[in-house]
Image (cartoon, rainbow, N blue to C red; front, top):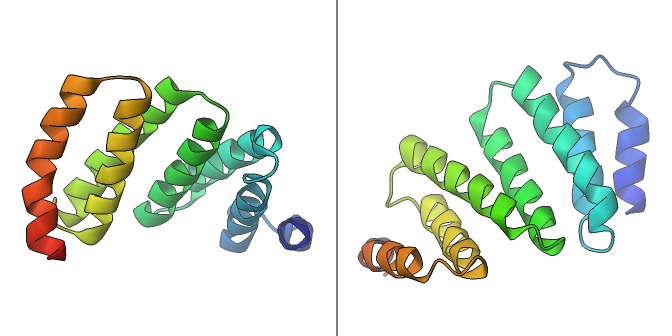
Amino acid sequence: LALGWAAWKTYLGRPHADEFRDMSVGVLGRALRPSRPGEALPVLEACLALLRRYQRDGDNILAAQSNLAGCLNALGRHDEVLVLMRETYARWVSKLGVSHEESIRIGCNLVLSLNKVELWDETKSFTRDQLPVARRTLG
């Protein structure tokens, strides 16, 4: 947690579009998330907004979405998590393909989100489609 605050304080004075400034906000949010998810939420939301506004690297935006989803999950806001996970999964698949390891990992997180909101039929259907892909890719 101290490292997260130190990173944020170090880069706070840089211009808004500075990559290190944006990343320091994410470091702080990830440091707060395990023990203080309520405090981490606005930090992670700000991080995602900064990345969407100033960064062109989609991977950083997708990682920030996943971090935000984890925080929302810790706060019990499962419907919001599901929306984020669906978007994140769709974007990873369009970027890397359904067989990529990262797409499979995010797909597993999506299944967990579907379970949390008790969408059993969709969970079963998605899992049936994804299991053969995961077996082929991961062995």
